[in-house]
Image 1 (cartoon, helix red, strand yellow):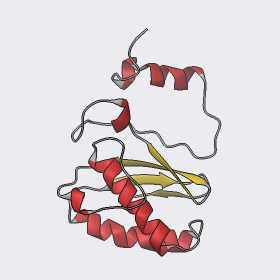
Image 2 (image 1 turned 90 degrees about the vertical axis):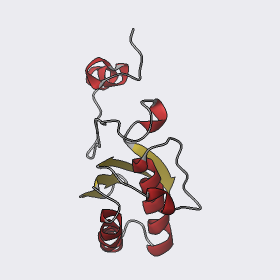
Image 3 (image 1 turned 30 degrees about the horizontal axis):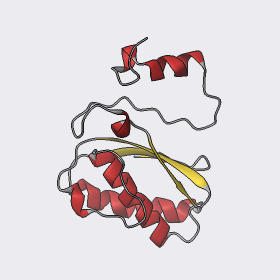
Length: 137
């Protein structure tokens, strides 16, 4: 049996997903090219955080520089990727600026504003869902 931390073609986690298909209306999957942070479970996409009674799921493609200045008091990264760090910052923005996190207008406008700020740090593409809404950029 192989290590769960392995290339997707030989990963036990990938094999598990094939053997036990996920039944969901929204699924986020991401195969990471490890540019920032080691290859380890803590740095594996997608990242998940609980907020307002929902699990928020996030995956990012791109490379960001000087992202450490984007901070969050409430949400903390477990791993060492720019992606998880920015996810925590985005969740902080949602928690501070959207009274109802299921309001797609508020979350959508907020993410458009945040996207402009993140582009100053480099390449930023993302998937975000709380199982009720799905946003891709």
